[in-house]
Image 1 (cartoon, chains in turn green, cyan):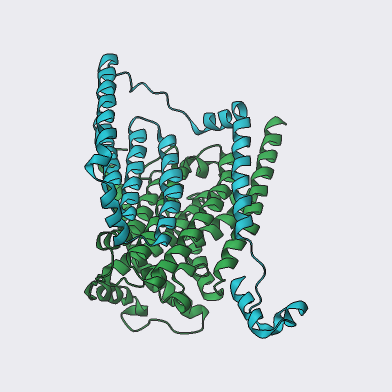
Image 2 (spheres, one colour; image 1 turned 60 degrees about the horizontal axis):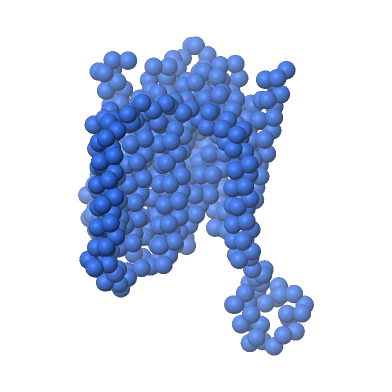
Length: 319
Length: 190
Protein backbone atom coordinates (compact mmCIF):
# COMPACT_ATOMS: atom_id res chain seq x y z
CA UNK A 1 0.00 0.00 0.00
CA UNK A 2 1.42 3.40 -0.97
CA UNK A 3 1.83 6.19 1.56
CA UNK A 4 -0.90 8.34 0.02
CA UNK A 5 -3.33 5.43 0.11
CA UNK A 6 -2.38 4.83 3.72
CA UNK A 7 -3.07 8.42 4.70
CA UNK A 8 -6.44 8.30 2.93
CA UNK A 9 -7.32 5.12 4.83
CA UNK A 10 -6.52 6.79 8.15
CA UNK A 11 -8.53 9.91 7.31
CA UNK A 12 -11.43 7.86 5.97
CA UNK A 13 -11.60 5.59 9.00
CA UNK A 14 -11.41 8.54 11.39
CA UNK A 15 -14.10 10.48 9.49
CA UNK A 16 -16.51 7.53 9.28
CA UNK A 17 -16.01 6.59 12.93
CA UNK A 18 -16.61 10.07 14.32
CA UNK A 19 -19.73 10.37 12.18
CA UNK A 20 -20.97 6.98 13.34
CA UNK A 21 -20.36 7.99 16.95
CA UNK A 22 -22.42 11.14 16.47
CA UNK A 23 -25.09 9.41 14.39
CA UNK A 24 -25.59 6.80 17.10
CA UNK A 25 -27.22 9.53 19.22
CA UNK A 26 -30.13 9.45 16.78
CA UNK A 27 -30.02 5.67 16.19
CA UNK A 28 -30.09 4.90 19.87
CA UNK A 29 -32.98 7.24 20.68
CA UNK A 30 -35.09 6.11 17.76
CA UNK A 31 -34.50 2.42 18.44
CA UNK A 32 -35.16 2.80 22.17
CA UNK A 33 -38.36 4.64 21.35
CA UNK A 34 -39.38 1.90 18.92
CA UNK A 35 -38.83 -0.85 21.50
CA UNK A 36 -40.52 1.12 24.28
CA UNK A 37 -43.51 2.03 22.08
CA UNK A 38 -42.75 5.78 21.96
CA UNK A 39 -42.03 8.16 19.09
CA UNK A 40 -38.57 9.38 20.02
CA UNK A 41 -36.93 12.46 18.46
CA UNK A 42 -38.93 13.23 15.29
CA UNK A 43 -39.11 17.05 15.11
CA UNK A 44 -35.77 18.36 13.81
CA UNK A 45 -35.29 17.51 10.15
CA UNK A 46 -36.46 14.38 8.30
CA UNK A 47 -37.18 11.56 10.78
CA UNK A 48 -35.62 13.74 13.47
CA UNK A 49 -32.16 13.22 12.01
CA UNK A 50 -31.04 16.76 12.85
CA UNK A 51 -31.18 15.89 16.56
CA UNK A 52 -27.54 14.91 16.04
CA UNK A 53 -26.65 18.46 15.01
CA UNK A 54 -28.79 19.99 17.75
CA UNK A 55 -27.25 17.79 20.42
CA UNK A 56 -23.70 18.45 19.28
CA UNK A 57 -24.28 22.20 19.13
CA UNK A 58 -25.82 22.12 22.60
CA UNK A 59 -22.77 20.28 23.98
CA UNK A 60 -20.38 22.77 22.39
CA UNK A 61 -22.18 25.82 23.74
CA UNK A 62 -22.66 24.62 27.30
CA UNK A 63 -20.55 26.23 29.97
CA UNK A 64 -17.33 24.27 30.28
CA UNK A 65 -17.00 24.29 34.04
CA UNK A 66 -14.10 22.95 36.05
CA UNK A 67 -14.98 22.69 39.73
CA UNK A 68 -12.61 24.73 41.95
CA UNK A 69 -12.10 21.72 44.23
CA UNK A 70 -11.07 19.44 41.35
CA UNK A 71 -7.53 18.39 40.51
CA UNK A 72 -7.43 20.42 37.30
CA UNK A 73 -4.85 18.83 35.02
CA UNK A 74 -6.09 15.29 35.62
CA UNK A 75 -9.70 16.42 35.36
CA UNK A 76 -9.02 17.76 31.86
CA UNK A 77 -6.96 14.78 30.68
CA UNK A 78 -9.38 12.03 31.80
CA UNK A 79 -12.09 12.40 29.11
CA UNK A 80 -9.48 12.48 26.36
CA UNK A 81 -8.08 9.11 27.45
CA UNK A 82 -11.27 7.17 26.77
CA UNK A 83 -11.86 8.66 23.32
CA UNK A 84 -8.17 8.34 22.45
CA UNK A 85 -7.69 4.71 23.46
CA UNK A 86 -10.86 3.58 21.71
CA UNK A 87 -9.96 5.42 18.51
CA UNK A 88 -6.43 3.94 18.58
CA UNK A 89 -7.92 0.45 18.96
CA UNK A 90 -9.65 0.81 15.58
CA UNK A 91 -6.20 0.84 13.98
CA UNK A 92 -6.03 -2.96 13.91
CA UNK A 93 -9.52 -3.77 12.57
CA UNK A 94 -9.65 -5.05 8.98
CA UNK A 95 -12.71 -3.31 7.51
CA UNK A 96 -12.25 -4.95 4.11
CA UNK A 97 -9.42 -6.96 2.45
CA UNK A 98 -7.31 -3.85 1.76
CA UNK A 99 -8.70 -1.39 4.27
CA UNK A 100 -6.76 -1.72 7.49
CA UNK A 101 -4.69 1.01 9.08
CA UNK A 102 -2.01 -1.20 10.67
CA UNK A 103 -1.81 -4.91 9.94
CA UNK A 104 -0.14 -5.80 13.24
CA UNK A 105 1.03 -9.33 14.03
CA UNK A 106 -0.12 -8.90 17.60
CA UNK A 107 -3.35 -7.09 16.73
CA UNK A 108 -5.51 -8.84 19.27
CA UNK A 109 -3.08 -8.11 22.10
CA UNK A 110 -2.94 -4.48 21.00
CA UNK A 111 -6.73 -4.29 21.34
CA UNK A 112 -6.55 -5.76 24.86
CA UNK A 113 -3.75 -3.35 25.80
CA UNK A 114 -5.74 -0.33 24.65
CA UNK A 115 -8.88 -1.45 26.45
CA UNK A 116 -6.88 -1.85 29.65
CA UNK A 117 -5.49 1.68 29.30
CA UNK A 118 -9.07 2.94 28.88
CA UNK A 119 -9.77 2.16 32.55
CA UNK A 120 -7.70 5.21 33.53
CA UNK A 121 -10.26 7.58 32.12
CA UNK A 122 -12.92 6.41 34.58
CA UNK A 123 -10.56 6.12 37.53
CA UNK A 124 -8.87 9.48 36.99
CA UNK A 125 -12.07 11.28 36.02
CA UNK A 126 -13.81 10.04 39.16
CA UNK A 127 -10.87 10.79 41.42
CA UNK A 128 -10.05 14.22 40.00
CA UNK A 129 -13.66 15.39 40.41
CA UNK A 130 -13.14 15.21 44.18
CA UNK A 131 -16.76 14.32 44.77
CA UNK A 132 -17.96 11.33 46.74
CA UNK A 133 -20.37 10.10 44.09
CA UNK A 134 -17.71 10.36 41.40
CA UNK A 135 -15.26 8.50 43.61
CA UNK A 136 -17.78 5.70 44.19
CA UNK A 137 -18.38 5.50 40.46
CA UNK A 138 -14.65 5.38 39.82
CA UNK A 139 -14.17 2.58 42.35
CA UNK A 140 -16.96 0.57 40.80
CA UNK A 141 -15.69 1.24 37.29
CA UNK A 142 -12.14 0.23 38.09
CA UNK A 143 -13.04 -3.08 39.72
CA UNK A 144 -15.64 -3.89 37.06
CA UNK A 145 -13.33 -3.20 34.16
CA UNK A 146 -10.31 -4.97 35.64
CA UNK A 147 -12.43 -8.05 36.36
CA UNK A 148 -14.11 -8.18 32.95
CA UNK A 149 -10.82 -7.57 31.12
CA UNK A 150 -9.69 -10.97 32.40
CA UNK A 151 -12.69 -12.78 30.92
CA UNK A 152 -12.45 -10.80 27.72
CA UNK A 153 -8.84 -11.84 27.19
CA UNK A 154 -9.49 -15.47 28.07
CA UNK A 155 -12.58 -15.73 25.87
CA UNK A 156 -10.51 -14.68 22.84
CA UNK A 157 -7.88 -17.37 23.35
CA UNK A 158 -10.13 -20.05 21.84
CA UNK A 159 -10.25 -18.04 18.59
CA UNK A 160 -6.48 -17.59 18.70
CA UNK A 161 -6.00 -21.34 19.14
CA UNK A 162 -8.25 -22.19 16.20
CA UNK A 163 -6.78 -19.62 13.83
CA UNK A 164 -3.21 -19.88 15.12
CA UNK A 165 -2.59 -16.14 14.97
CA UNK A 166 -3.06 -12.85 16.81
CA UNK A 167 -3.41 -11.06 13.49
CA UNK A 168 -7.00 -10.04 12.82
CA UNK A 169 -6.65 -10.38 9.06
CA UNK A 170 -5.52 -13.98 9.50
CA UNK A 171 -8.37 -14.61 11.92
CA UNK A 172 -10.89 -13.40 9.32
CA UNK A 173 -9.26 -15.56 6.64
CA UNK A 174 -9.45 -18.60 8.96
CA UNK A 175 -13.25 -18.21 8.99
CA UNK A 176 -13.72 -18.74 5.25
CA UNK A 177 -15.32 -22.16 5.77
CA UNK A 178 -17.00 -21.69 9.11
CA UNK A 179 -17.57 -18.65 11.33
CA UNK A 180 -15.99 -18.99 14.76
CA UNK A 181 -19.35 -18.35 16.43
CA UNK A 182 -20.25 -21.95 15.50
CA UNK A 183 -17.11 -23.48 16.98
CA UNK A 184 -16.73 -20.97 19.82
CA UNK A 185 -20.27 -20.13 21.01
CA UNK A 186 -19.20 -19.83 24.66
CA UNK A 187 -16.27 -17.63 23.73
CA UNK A 188 -18.59 -15.37 21.74
CA UNK A 189 -21.11 -15.04 24.59
CA UNK A 190 -18.47 -14.28 27.20
CA UNK A 191 -16.71 -11.81 24.90
CA UNK A 192 -19.91 -9.95 24.21
CA UNK A 193 -20.93 -9.80 27.89
CA UNK A 194 -17.43 -8.66 28.83
CA UNK A 195 -17.62 -6.11 26.02
CA UNK A 196 -20.83 -4.67 27.45
CA UNK A 197 -19.14 -4.43 30.84
CA UNK A 198 -15.97 -2.87 29.37
CA UNK A 199 -17.92 -0.13 27.64
CA UNK A 200 -20.03 0.18 30.83
CA UNK A 201 -23.26 0.22 28.89
CA UNK A 202 -26.59 -0.76 30.33
CA UNK A 203 -27.26 -3.21 31.95
CA UNK A 204 -23.69 -2.98 33.29
CA UNK A 205 -23.51 0.80 33.65
CA UNK A 206 -23.09 0.70 37.42
CA UNK A 207 -20.13 3.13 37.42
CA UNK A 208 -22.57 5.84 36.37
CA UNK A 209 -25.85 4.40 37.69
CA UNK A 210 -27.90 7.59 37.71
CA UNK A 211 -30.45 6.45 40.28
CA UNK A 212 -27.73 5.77 42.86
CA UNK A 213 -24.73 7.92 41.96
CA UNK A 214 -26.18 10.96 40.09
CA UNK A 215 -23.94 10.31 37.07
CA UNK A 216 -21.09 8.43 38.71
CA UNK A 217 -17.60 9.20 37.51
CA UNK A 218 -18.67 12.01 35.18
CA UNK A 219 -21.04 13.79 37.58
CA UNK A 220 -18.87 16.94 37.62
CA UNK A 221 -18.28 17.10 33.88
CA UNK A 222 -20.08 19.46 31.54
CA UNK A 223 -19.84 20.77 28.01
CA UNK A 224 -17.55 19.05 25.59
CA UNK A 225 -15.63 17.24 28.34
CA UNK A 226 -18.82 15.33 29.09
CA UNK A 227 -19.20 15.05 25.32
CA UNK A 228 -15.89 13.20 25.13
CA UNK A 229 -17.11 10.58 27.60
CA UNK A 230 -20.30 10.37 25.55
CA UNK A 231 -18.45 9.93 22.25
CA UNK A 232 -16.05 7.51 23.91
CA UNK A 233 -19.00 5.37 24.95
CA UNK A 234 -20.50 5.28 21.45
CA UNK A 235 -17.10 4.60 19.91
CA UNK A 236 -16.68 1.81 22.46
CA UNK A 237 -19.96 0.24 21.35
CA UNK A 238 -18.82 0.44 17.73
CA UNK A 239 -15.44 -1.03 18.63
CA UNK A 240 -16.87 -4.01 20.53
CA UNK A 241 -19.39 -4.64 17.72
CA UNK A 242 -16.66 -4.47 15.09
CA UNK A 243 -14.43 -6.79 17.13
CA UNK A 244 -17.29 -9.27 17.63
CA UNK A 245 -17.90 -9.29 13.89
CA UNK A 246 -14.20 -9.69 13.08
CA UNK A 247 -13.53 -12.43 15.59
CA UNK A 248 -16.71 -14.49 15.53
CA UNK A 249 -18.83 -13.54 12.50
CA UNK A 250 -16.37 -13.69 9.65
CA UNK A 251 -15.49 -9.99 9.45
CA UNK A 252 -15.88 -8.78 5.87
CA UNK A 253 -16.62 -12.28 4.52
CA UNK A 254 -20.02 -12.74 2.92
CA UNK A 255 -21.80 -13.71 -0.30
CA UNK A 256 -20.32 -11.82 -3.24
CA UNK A 257 -23.40 -9.83 -4.28
CA UNK A 258 -22.37 -7.12 -1.83
CA UNK A 259 -18.84 -5.71 -1.45
CA UNK A 260 -16.90 -6.83 1.67
CA UNK A 261 -16.99 -3.40 3.29
CA UNK A 262 -20.79 -3.37 3.13
CA UNK A 263 -20.98 -6.79 4.77
CA UNK A 264 -18.71 -5.57 7.55
CA UNK A 265 -20.79 -2.45 8.18
CA UNK A 266 -24.09 -4.37 8.08
CA UNK A 267 -22.88 -6.94 10.60
CA UNK A 268 -21.42 -4.23 12.85
CA UNK A 269 -24.68 -2.30 12.84
CA UNK A 270 -26.56 -5.46 13.78
CA UNK A 271 -24.47 -5.75 16.95
CA UNK A 272 -24.83 -2.04 17.71
CA UNK A 273 -28.58 -2.73 17.55
CA UNK A 274 -28.15 -5.59 20.02
CA UNK A 275 -26.34 -3.21 22.41
CA UNK A 276 -29.28 -0.83 22.25
CA UNK A 277 -31.82 -3.64 22.62
CA UNK A 278 -29.98 -4.74 25.79
CA UNK A 279 -30.39 -1.22 27.14
CA UNK A 280 -34.07 -1.19 26.28
CA UNK A 281 -34.88 -4.53 27.85
CA UNK A 282 -32.66 -5.41 30.81
CA UNK A 283 -32.60 -3.94 34.33
CA UNK A 284 -29.32 -3.03 35.99
CA UNK A 285 -27.89 -5.64 38.40
CA UNK A 286 -26.56 -4.71 41.81
CA UNK A 287 -22.82 -4.06 42.03
CA UNK A 288 -21.96 -7.21 44.02
CA UNK A 289 -24.17 -9.28 41.71
CA UNK A 290 -22.18 -8.07 38.72
CA UNK A 291 -18.81 -8.95 40.24
CA UNK A 292 -20.10 -12.29 41.57
CA UNK A 293 -21.55 -13.14 38.16
CA UNK A 294 -18.19 -12.44 36.58
CA UNK A 295 -15.97 -14.46 38.89
CA UNK A 296 -18.36 -17.30 39.69
CA UNK A 297 -20.07 -17.86 36.34
CA UNK A 298 -18.03 -16.37 33.51
CA UNK A 299 -14.56 -17.33 34.76
CA UNK A 300 -15.25 -21.10 35.18
CA UNK A 301 -17.17 -21.08 31.91
CA UNK A 302 -14.37 -19.45 29.97
CA UNK A 303 -11.67 -21.64 31.53
CA UNK A 304 -13.66 -24.77 30.64
CA UNK A 305 -14.07 -23.42 27.12
CA UNK A 306 -10.31 -22.85 26.88
CA UNK A 307 -9.49 -26.39 28.06
CA UNK A 308 -12.03 -28.10 25.80
CA UNK A 309 -10.98 -26.05 22.78
CA UNK A 310 -7.35 -26.89 23.44
CA UNK A 311 -8.09 -30.60 23.83
CA UNK A 312 -10.20 -30.76 20.65
CA UNK A 313 -7.63 -28.77 18.68
CA UNK A 314 -4.86 -31.13 19.81
CA UNK A 315 -6.99 -34.21 19.00
CA UNK A 316 -7.83 -32.93 15.49
CA UNK A 317 -4.19 -32.07 14.88
CA UNK A 318 -3.03 -35.57 15.82
CA UNK A 319 -5.67 -37.55 13.93
CA UNK B 1 14.13 3.44 14.34
CA UNK B 2 17.03 4.46 16.58
CA UNK B 3 15.65 8.02 16.79
CA UNK B 4 12.35 6.59 18.10
CA UNK B 5 14.36 4.53 20.56
CA UNK B 6 16.23 7.56 21.91
CA UNK B 7 13.10 9.71 22.17
CA UNK B 8 11.13 7.10 24.05
CA UNK B 9 14.01 6.25 26.38
CA UNK B 10 14.43 9.95 27.15
CA UNK B 11 10.70 10.10 27.96
CA UNK B 12 11.07 7.04 30.20
CA UNK B 13 13.98 8.58 32.12
CA UNK B 14 12.31 11.97 32.56
CA UNK B 15 9.04 10.33 33.64
CA UNK B 16 10.86 8.16 36.17
CA UNK B 17 12.66 11.17 37.64
CA UNK B 18 9.27 12.89 37.92
CA UNK B 19 7.91 9.85 39.78
CA UNK B 20 10.55 10.36 42.45
CA UNK B 21 10.25 14.11 42.76
CA UNK B 22 6.43 14.54 42.78
CA UNK B 23 4.91 15.25 46.19
CA UNK B 24 1.43 14.11 45.28
CA UNK B 25 1.13 10.28 45.17
CA UNK B 26 -1.42 10.19 42.31
CA UNK B 27 0.71 12.48 40.13
CA UNK B 28 3.73 10.30 40.85
CA UNK B 29 1.79 7.17 39.85
CA UNK B 30 0.64 8.79 36.62
CA UNK B 31 4.25 9.55 35.72
CA UNK B 32 5.03 5.92 36.48
CA UNK B 33 2.32 4.88 33.99
CA UNK B 34 3.91 7.17 31.39
CA UNK B 35 7.26 5.59 32.15
CA UNK B 36 5.84 2.09 31.52
CA UNK B 37 4.26 3.23 28.26
CA UNK B 38 7.58 4.74 27.20
CA UNK B 39 9.37 1.47 27.95
CA UNK B 40 6.74 -0.34 25.86
CA UNK B 41 7.56 2.00 22.96
CA UNK B 42 11.26 1.27 23.52
CA UNK B 43 10.51 -2.43 23.07
CA UNK B 44 8.41 -1.72 19.98
CA UNK B 45 11.12 0.43 18.42
CA UNK B 46 13.82 -2.24 18.77
CA UNK B 47 11.50 -4.80 17.18
CA UNK B 48 9.97 -6.66 20.11
CA UNK B 49 6.25 -5.87 19.84
CA UNK B 50 5.10 -8.85 21.93
CA UNK B 51 7.05 -7.75 25.03
CA UNK B 52 5.97 -4.16 24.44
CA UNK B 53 2.27 -5.03 24.40
CA UNK B 54 2.63 -7.30 27.44
CA UNK B 55 4.28 -4.39 29.25
CA UNK B 56 1.22 -2.25 28.54
CA UNK B 57 -1.33 -4.95 29.41
CA UNK B 58 0.30 -6.13 32.63
CA UNK B 59 2.13 -3.14 34.11
CA UNK B 60 0.35 -0.07 32.77
CA UNK B 61 -3.09 -1.65 32.39
CA UNK B 62 -3.45 -3.89 35.43
CA UNK B 63 -0.90 -3.33 38.17
CA UNK B 64 -0.83 0.47 38.03
CA UNK B 65 -4.64 0.64 37.95
CA UNK B 66 -4.70 -1.31 41.20
CA UNK B 67 -2.04 0.99 42.70
CA UNK B 68 -4.06 4.05 41.78
CA UNK B 69 -7.20 2.33 43.04
CA UNK B 70 -5.66 1.85 46.49
CA UNK B 71 -4.05 5.30 46.70
CA UNK B 72 -7.34 6.85 45.57
CA UNK B 73 -9.17 5.25 48.48
CA UNK B 74 -6.56 6.43 51.01
CA UNK B 75 -7.46 10.02 50.09
CA UNK B 76 -3.95 11.41 50.59
CA UNK B 77 -4.08 15.17 50.26
CA UNK B 78 -2.13 18.29 51.19
CA UNK B 79 -1.07 16.98 54.59
CA UNK B 80 0.79 14.03 53.07
CA UNK B 81 2.31 16.28 50.40
CA UNK B 82 3.75 18.47 53.17
CA UNK B 83 5.04 15.38 54.92
CA UNK B 84 6.62 14.20 51.69
CA UNK B 85 8.35 17.58 51.28
CA UNK B 86 10.04 17.19 54.65
CA UNK B 87 11.22 13.72 53.68
CA UNK B 88 12.69 14.77 50.37
CA UNK B 89 15.41 17.09 51.72
CA UNK B 90 18.84 17.18 50.04
CA UNK B 91 20.60 15.65 53.04
CA UNK B 92 18.35 12.60 52.68
CA UNK B 93 19.02 11.88 49.02
CA UNK B 94 22.51 13.33 48.65
CA UNK B 95 24.41 10.23 49.80
CA UNK B 96 22.60 7.64 47.62
CA UNK B 97 22.65 10.03 44.66
CA UNK B 98 26.43 10.52 44.87
CA UNK B 99 26.98 6.76 45.04
CA UNK B 100 24.62 6.30 42.07
CA UNK B 101 26.57 8.86 40.04
CA UNK B 102 29.71 6.75 40.58
CA UNK B 103 27.82 3.69 39.30
CA UNK B 104 26.44 5.70 36.35
CA UNK B 105 29.97 6.74 35.39
CA UNK B 106 31.09 3.13 35.49
CA UNK B 107 28.14 2.04 33.38
CA UNK B 108 28.74 4.73 30.75
CA UNK B 109 32.44 3.74 30.63
CA UNK B 110 31.53 0.06 30.12
CA UNK B 111 28.97 0.90 27.42
CA UNK B 112 31.54 3.00 25.55
CA UNK B 113 34.08 0.19 25.79
CA UNK B 114 31.82 -2.45 24.27
CA UNK B 115 30.49 -0.44 21.35
CA UNK B 116 26.94 -0.80 20.07
CA UNK B 117 25.84 -4.38 19.65
CA UNK B 118 22.43 -3.72 21.18
CA UNK B 119 20.41 -3.58 18.01
CA UNK B 120 20.85 -7.18 16.79
CA UNK B 121 17.96 -8.63 18.76
CA UNK B 122 16.05 -11.73 17.69
CA UNK B 123 12.28 -11.27 17.60
CA UNK B 124 10.52 -13.69 19.94
CA UNK B 125 7.15 -14.84 18.67
CA UNK B 126 4.24 -15.35 21.11
CA UNK B 127 4.30 -19.04 20.20
CA UNK B 128 7.88 -19.60 21.34
CA UNK B 129 7.15 -17.77 24.60
CA UNK B 130 4.22 -20.12 25.28
CA UNK B 131 6.25 -23.19 24.33
CA UNK B 132 8.98 -22.13 26.75
CA UNK B 133 6.48 -21.36 29.52
CA UNK B 134 4.52 -24.60 29.26
CA UNK B 135 7.46 -26.81 28.28
CA UNK B 136 10.78 -25.93 29.82
CA UNK B 137 9.59 -23.72 32.68
CA UNK B 138 6.30 -25.46 33.49
CA UNK B 139 7.28 -26.01 37.14
CA UNK B 140 7.94 -22.30 37.64
CA UNK B 141 4.53 -21.52 36.11
CA UNK B 142 2.82 -24.03 38.38
CA UNK B 143 4.59 -22.68 41.46
CA UNK B 144 3.60 -19.12 40.56
CA UNK B 145 0.06 -20.38 40.24
CA UNK B 146 0.23 -21.82 43.76
CA UNK B 147 1.57 -18.54 45.10
CA UNK B 148 -1.24 -16.55 43.49
CA UNK B 149 -3.79 -19.10 44.74
CA UNK B 150 -2.52 -18.58 48.29
CA UNK B 151 -3.05 -14.85 47.84
CA UNK B 152 -6.58 -15.38 46.53
CA UNK B 153 -7.52 -17.74 49.36
CA UNK B 154 -6.13 -15.28 51.91
CA UNK B 155 -8.05 -12.39 50.40
CA UNK B 156 -11.25 -14.46 50.25
CA UNK B 157 -10.80 -15.42 53.90
CA UNK B 158 -10.28 -11.82 55.03
CA UNK B 159 -13.13 -10.55 52.88
CA UNK B 160 -15.62 -13.18 54.00
CA UNK B 161 -18.33 -12.09 56.35
CA UNK B 162 -21.49 -13.45 57.83
CA UNK B 163 -24.67 -13.18 55.81
CA UNK B 164 -26.35 -9.97 56.77
CA UNK B 165 -30.05 -9.78 57.49
CA UNK B 166 -31.40 -6.56 56.18
CA UNK B 167 -34.87 -6.96 57.68
CA UNK B 168 -35.70 -7.80 61.29
CA UNK B 169 -38.41 -10.32 60.32
CA UNK B 170 -35.88 -12.25 58.25
CA UNK B 171 -33.44 -12.92 61.12
CA UNK B 172 -32.89 -16.52 62.13
CA UNK B 173 -34.48 -18.00 65.25
CA UNK B 174 -31.67 -17.64 67.82
CA UNK B 175 -31.05 -14.04 66.89
CA UNK B 176 -34.68 -13.13 67.22
CA UNK B 177 -34.53 -13.96 70.95
CA UNK B 178 -31.79 -11.43 71.57
CA UNK B 179 -32.62 -8.16 73.29
CA UNK B 180 -33.36 -5.38 70.86
CA UNK B 181 -30.32 -3.00 71.07
CA UNK B 182 -27.74 -5.77 70.98
CA UNK B 183 -29.24 -7.25 67.86
CA UNK B 184 -29.10 -3.92 66.11
CA UNK B 185 -25.46 -3.48 67.02
CA UNK B 186 -24.72 -6.90 65.64
CA UNK B 187 -26.38 -6.31 62.32
CA UNK B 188 -24.36 -3.14 61.88
CA UNK B 189 -21.04 -4.64 62.88
CA UNK B 190 -21.13 -7.86 60.89
